[in-house]
Figure 1: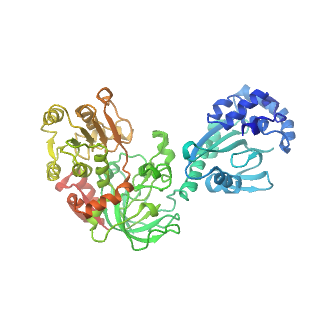
Figure 2 (figure 1 turned 45 degrees about the vertical axis):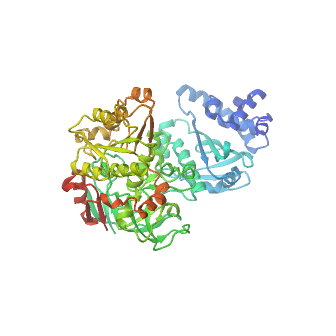
Figure 3 (figure 1 turned 90 degrees about the horizontal axis):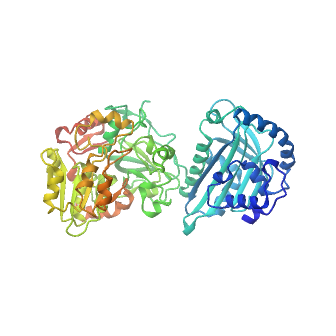
Length: 243
Length: 388
């Protein structure tokens, strides 16, 4: 896995995230290993790292290259104003009695995700690597975006990023890794959101009704419930007295 | 159906509410034949728990008959007579598969709330606030039971409801607390609190081979009931408990000590509690009076067993005594599922008849009165069973 992730350096996804061979190995093993990923990434953008590790050949890259103009200007603006900082989430659960294969299969069919991620209204697969996402907001309209799968390692890892013109630029990966001594499969999700300029963390969380961290945590919990217990625990629809 | 609903401090009403429905494939609906009020229900009644909502249906000690089954429940049948463990467990997670049912990963829909405070969440519970899932409880005519295939336990026809009902919580709770004492031949066990859990703990300690049980409380009828179970008793209003325990055990101290009171010191009437209630709401003063005493009283190398419920933080635990005396502490919500079969067998063999505990039998409609007499220990109330 490390080899897959680290031996390619032909990406020009994002100059600011261009990594040396040694650096790529370090990042590759970070994503494949047991450490906390976000701690190791520090100032790097997750999107840039995922792009650079996945290598070329994706339509997104050209576009991303063009985008970096805007990114560069916006980046300077944002660092001057302290706004537009990315929001990062890392969450892991261990799922008992299920192989990485089963869990990967569920996830790889992205249209399954709204079953466990309650903030998603729908995910529609539009091509082998592209999908269209619709998420509910607590107030106002839903938001929509397209995403592209950037790496797909069967039974191990799926990474993706939103493509151009997403309201909330986001990227991330999910990793499936057998735990030692038959203690189940560890499922780790790492996500990065870049809210539109001018929207900082707290406002973003309010916009989404709960924090992105909580959304991912809840989604993973529901995934675990469904895979281990066959259903998602609920009390919705049960009786109660006068409220 | 009729159900006992919570409406704030000291306020429960019997209301007509919609019948429960199957919500998940592993659910069942049980028509309730007997249901009890637990000491821990008083904690909700007293308004301690900030995650209760108006209209929540109370109750976690109930049994009855299956009237409806979800599509995924294949090992139970409509008409089965069953008891319902108060802990809700999926049966397949890391914890359930290690017989640690009250630590189930998959039964609390509101686990995130608990994680904020405790790091990780225990299982969901019936009728016990939204912190433990917000599940509608069993002081009602019907209840929905999730994971019915592993939760519901079919009981023998020849035993009565009154003999079986306490398998849902307090009998296994007292029994597990005694098991946690790691009782060896010749051992003396000291039990603080002669409420329902303490009563079962006393009898369970003997079932597990204790030589002596010394029980501590101050309510006369509860001390009498402890004596009827074979315990020597100490009234803490009349005696300095630590000193007495030392003298009674040859200066060595009890081999194991049990806190069957917990933060709910009011339940067993330990000290005035009402003025502390507001502090408990702010989750800063679970009152560990008993725990402190027990740690200091325990013999060196002994075991502290804590079935008493704590939910927040405690102050001034004598950690120096605990560490330097080399004590072990064992605790947890009860793994009820683990004990259903063996304890039913003990009842069948006549080793214990749990119905000794019941002092009041009332119709469900009289729940408001029942809560009041139980809370204030009026009319020698130790345990109320409600009949829907």
